[in-house]
Image (cartoon, rainbow, N blue to C red; front, side, top):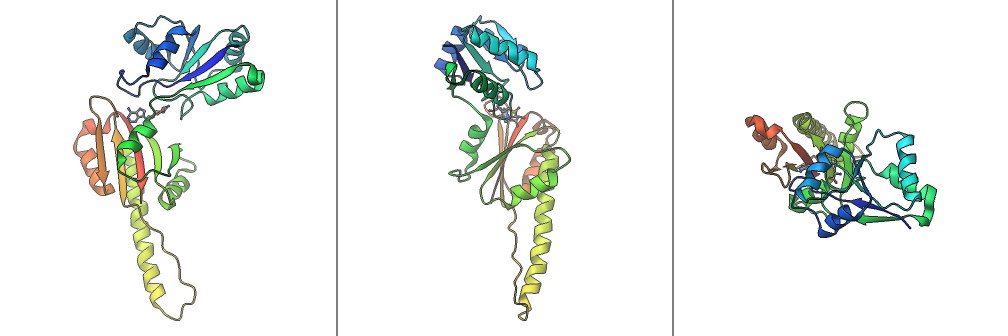
Length: 252
Ligand code: SAM
């Protein structure tokens, strides 16, 4: 029976990989990579010589068929993404689905757990994380405002991924929603004070704490906590702080 291993790889620091992951990457017949050049750096670092095959979110049906054929021939495969856990805002889900649909129980799908930017960020956030919502990347245009309002109104902390191009934009948008809520709440207070009004309008609560994690596990790892305005100022102060990869946790 062949096995498809879903292998987590480092999100920055190459030492953040399990011994099991290294063993499996060395033992499988092929490694399916989101970007073979990115994975090659990891493989070279650990002197792993397993051949790689490109598999990414734009891979067509032919590529999936080829991968299914390898599995049907008894080959063992490992799927990795550029960083972290495949399938988490990364290619993987479609392949796992195709494999389960075609082979059912006849191909084993095993997870080889490890780093993910979500858990790394949550673990150092200081925000209670017994429950949280993960919203991945927000849409750039259509539906963005609705998502932002959903984040602000969430009863649980919300984790989002953000790129360097939009990190300030995201924080400014949250700040503006906060301001809007403050204005609305003032109006509501005034209305509710009028005793003849039977139905009191309910207030929304604004975002009070945000944690922005930049370049986790890398040389320039930086964590900003506190009020949105202060974080925006700090990130704007230094152009280098606007570079890299970001996870934002919005708490209440
Ligand atoms: N599959 C990955 C995981 O498990 O975390 C996530 C892949 S997603 C395409 C890439 C995004 O994850 C980045 O844009 C950033 O938001 C976040 N990310 C990945 N590595 C990070 C790091 N070292 N520090 C902060 N955020 C990171």
